[in-house]
Image (cartoon, rainbow over all chains, first blue to last red; front, side, top):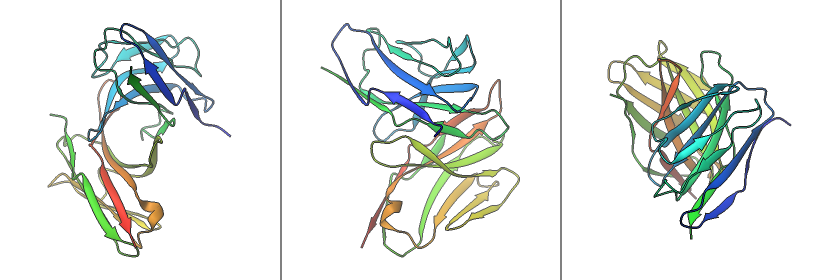
Amino acid sequence: DGGITQSPKYLFRKEGQNVTLSCEQNLNHDAMYWYRQDPGQGLRLIYYSQIVNDFQKGDIAEGYSVSREKKESFPLTVTSAQKNPTAFYLCASSIRQGVEKLFFGSGTQLSVL
Amino acid sequence: GEDVEQSLFLSVREGDSSVINCTYTDSSSTYLYWYKQEPGAGLQLLTYIFSNMDMKQDQRLTVLLNKKDKHLSLRIADTQTGDSAIYFCAETLVGGYNKLIFGAGTRLAVHP
């Protein structure tokens, strides 16, 4: 079955440490996205990529980095510069056909030790 | 400006209809969406409506759009316990890419 896989489901970060969240899709979608979800708030866009080897900053990119070396993969690194990293992180992909139908992974909960 | 607003909580009795409301600010929105999020999971697209439509029905779901008031609603008929989730309203802004703006989500609690 096609879908988006995020791993790990839970992740703990020590102070000063960089951590990487994995996102893989087998839907053959060109566009991929990373969102951050905080309780009681809507999803905020961190980074997005429309094609391989290209990505753009979203609304809250500071303290995060991404790469898009393969169509299927869009990993997100939460760097030590991100001072408030505790959140639920959601990866999504879409096929660009006017209607922006996003398919989401099951998310990664990142917490600070 | 970009803003999508929803009430945060709604409680309904099983079998009743649920109505979740949303207001948005950008009149250039092309599509408006409703997503559902179950606990600890990602979002699932429920339905969407093109901005030149007033209503869309899909089985138990009815979407109403009032462009003049920039108001979107989702009606769930015969609400079941399995409908308990967070419902997000979102709009697409036309720009360099079709950016989605999400509301904060409405938590729907269905009780017997």
